Length: 220
Image 1: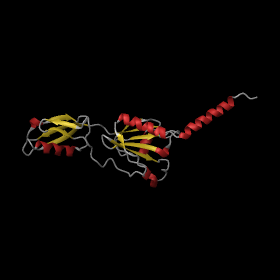
Image 2: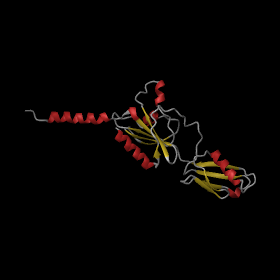
Image 3: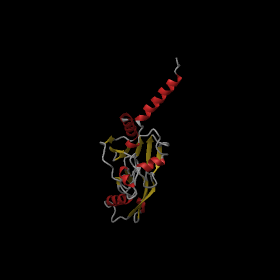
Image 4: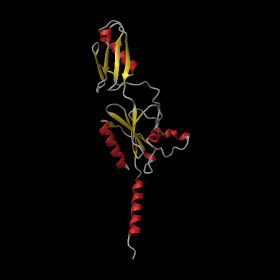
């Protein structure tokens, strides 16, 4: 079982390089992903318009390092900021060159939020996050757990920043009533839910092979 979880961690680190923070065994506190405004990330396209200085209007793409490059303000790191926060940063920097600038920032293209479900589920893969979803709901969207799944040790990998990730272990086997929902976790964009294989499955398969061998053995 431990070997399976370590393998999942290794796969996740290859996909998103980071250092994994120590595992939190406490019951996770539910968080709502829909209450926060969208935050800019690499690949997003924003349109910056200046009311009184249209010659500085630009449409730019957030680069992989999180920066945009504007003629009026130079390089600015906007990844992780909301559109409004990015607008204020641009105005502050532009004020060094323009007097009382007025600007608007519009998000033209953005990376659609998603989560990944892997392991012992019917349809593992990447799923677009269109609304608030918990780990248990994510597993249902992936077709549900297989009989070989270990529902008491579902692992959620969550990226904290470019260097750190957090690992949470959920016991979804005990969720039978509304009061048990504290054992579930509201996902955030980029989370990966990994459902490990139950070690008992290997034992059962071995026992089946032994039984078949016994039936096929010649009787004296």
